[in-house]
Image (cartoon, helix red, strand yellow):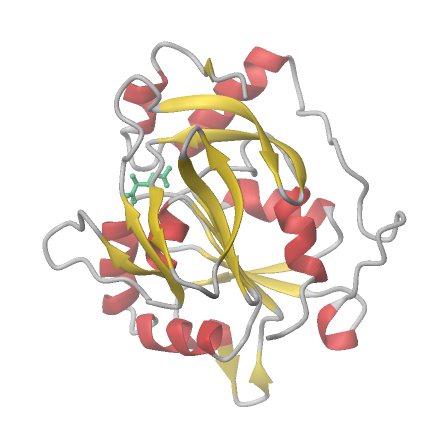
Length: 249
Ligand code: GLN
């Protein structure tokens, strides 16, 4: 792992809850244009199953706050259809479930939690994930998935569908934001950490996918994967590709 500061000012940019696209631009600017795709796309040799059997899977990206567009772009590049999820009807209609998989993006977990509850989406989302819809949570998305948030904002709740306890903003100011080459059990991944949480405790059903130093930063439990970082900001397709290949639990 070679932590490299994204830029000296990224902490300030990232502290703007809506600043994720700006951070992505900074990362791109530094590496000169579009990020390199480092892994094969679905259909190029890894036997990706398309959930639902309708050609391409439909992935619901939770779009209440935070970094939505980078996930949408990456998923579409990998051959998925995307829908933005805000209200319960985006998840399930009279015709049945509307998504084959879900992405919970980064942002500010306490804000996303508040908006989920005020839109009435908290419980339907929890139920969809608990019922087995393959789900990837990144950064604040990992916090939302967790059973326990160790330093939650006042009144903050989490979905409790991943048996981990997480600590928000766990890497301290110096390692606050960085682009990192990470060794994961799924393969190498270049990802961005932005005020990242860390998994401090994990239940027996939870598989550790990656650590940064001693800290657990990526986990999987059945069809639910939570990562403390942002693969979508570096264009790293590893986790999204896995999501599209995951069968309903
Ligand atoms: N620190 C934020 C939170 O606790 C997460 C930051 C992020 O998603 N990049 O919600």
